[in-house]
Amino acid sequence: MAVRQVLRMGDARLLERAQPVLDFGAPGLQELLIDMRDTMAALQGAGLAAPQIGVGLQVVIFGVERNLRYPEAEAVPETVLINPVLTSLDDEIDEAWEGCLSVPGMRGLVPRHRHVRYRGFDAEGKPIDRSVSGFHARVVQHEVDHLFGVLYPMRIRDLRQFGFSEVLFPGRDVTLDD
Image 1 (spheres, rainbow, N blue to C red):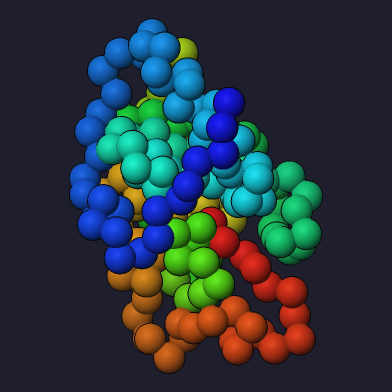
Image 2 (image 1 turned 45 degrees about the vertical axis):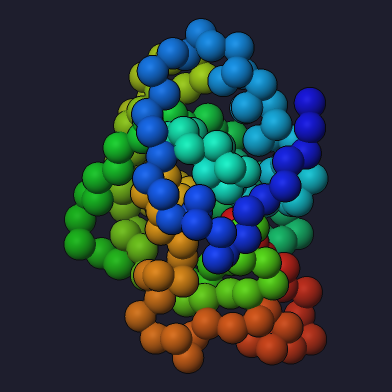
């Protein structure tokens, strides 16, 4: 339908808590999902949360196959996740570089749980329950954070590990957002 403008860090709407979806049959939900897919594809993102386009609902989409922006990442299935609940499966934490469509051109070293379980619903309201690890776990945690008003720079432990992509990684094509 449409590529929507992505809100950027500093916009107060990104810090708000999103509301749960109550009506899975609402035509507006399907239109939102189409716009989110179009926006994510146009920007070559790995995921997108509804609050990033100014919609305060608990809706995220994510998925990556082979992507030049994520050459070392394993594939993550295309997923619509509504009203998600995340649970860490152990205490193992990994730190890895992240970017975000709402924080363009920047990267930060972010700690995340290595193994998580996520539950919620798909676009039709059918339950989803997955246990995942690695990049898949990182992507879902990043996107779900948006539903609670958390941007990845808020999770960085050492701000010396946060900066512009071209400065942190000179000579590399590193536009790894979301």
